[in-house]
Length: 318
Image 1 (cartoon, helix red, strand yellow):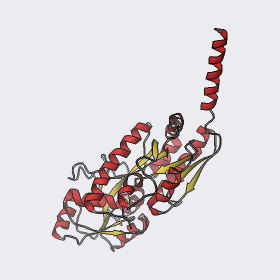
Image 2 (cartoon, rainbow, N blue to C red):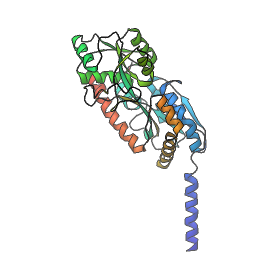
Image 3 (cartoon, rainbow, N blue to C red):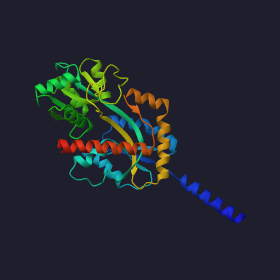
């Protein structure tokens, strides 16, 4: 009996040591977009806290290209030990529909860890356009089919898809004008080269407050504190319309569940820190804590929603 207890104790100690072995070297979080963008700033806001919580350095590895596909492909083929993660963006659920072929399967090659943040988009127009509401914009678009141009940060991006969703749900016809990134797009809306766009909130708010853009609606389920007088698209008369830009952490499929839980717990603790929450608010981001299962349900819902729209609209990445 004593020997059996001793053996059981040794087994438990061995298991505990094995469980505590992660992480045993620096953790890399890959982002498939350039440094300085919204997702990059968001990621660099949480990495110092993650390093403290996990006891190892956490480095950001920017691998931009092909709408985030280069970064996703790198992580999909990385060791399944929790030391290489991906800062996921909406392309994780849309790129399989946008690109003719991918060297990885976004639905099967990753496992969710947890949400990081979510930011609503805002529908803005050039102030010279004679509309002051979503209803007025729809009426104008129906009177001028195809004549209204809307800018986006590129074909297949969340801002492009927000516009395509508006076209479908409002039963109107617009002309899409893709740009290389949101800043260039919003600059041309302000100058009047294009009349409107769906913009991420942090990029648009300063221009709205300066009077260089007119905000018609935000795309979340609830109004945002940054623009409390601006209605949601649902309140403006488009039932069920939501189109947010979100980010979260995922790992290569096959990463041990215990490691996924460990990272998720560390992430949620970081997201609870007052200094992190203050920085998120300053960026217009909503802090989103939850379990891997919560994030998995969101990924499934987003994939189903946008795959249908992309197919209906015939959108393909160039």
